[in-house]
Length: 100
Image (cartoon, rainbow, N blue to C red; front, side, top):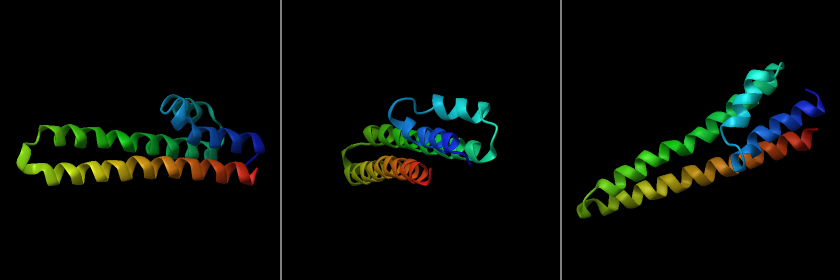
């Protein structure tokens, strides 16, 4: 994979901060190399993962007072997912830039 393709793949991961869904989708449909498409799809899926957390939070707010423990558990799971995917995207982007 060429230097430009590695930078483009790294941008897909870093796009979590400026265009989370748009850039990986565009790169996936425009890129010719399979490796770049693979990184675009991987980053898109990792950007979608935190969206799973939103229904968990909504479900937690609907619960009554007796379910405070479940609400706290849902908050912790959500925070781990969001922080984990953010760190994973940063690490993957840096690894790709380091290779180029």
